Image 1 (tube, one colour):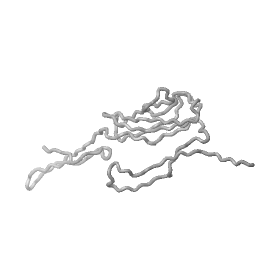
Image 2 (cartoon, one colour):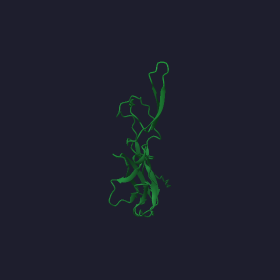
Image 3 (cartoon, helix red, strand yellow):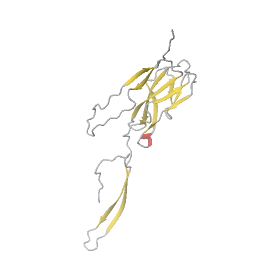
Image 4 (cartoon, rainbow, N blue to C red):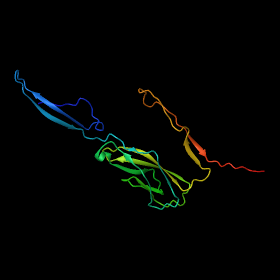
Length: 197
């Protein structure tokens, strides 16, 4: 009897199958005989990956006259596991009792749960939880930004201080080391008037 033992840990997401041959050779001095048998080892999935949102944040601009039940946007996420470990359900975090929005747990479609007629000029931020069906489950948090109706003149908007950021760090950098500071600025849209005497 021959035992095949593990020599290292596996990562199914990197390689899910191994195939090789085991060769048995007898002890014949002048006429040794051998036999080969193919071996296939399939690596089973464990729920070791969290869902990953395909965007951050998801954004939408909707008219103030949008009626309840109207689809606004779709939240999507992916999971590198397989089977039920990769099946994702969505929910809203810290959802207020009078929330204007709802999310379909299976499709990730965000819809209006109430009339938005009185919400013109408002920006809503919704925290979304993506949870897989693994045991135990893994989850991740995403963000939805919904802008309703016309944005009033002079309203503050957010923008980053730089258009892009590039950082070079050594590969042996310790965990938790601060590598970058990103600044957000509030910008006001200003109208300039020429006044003639």
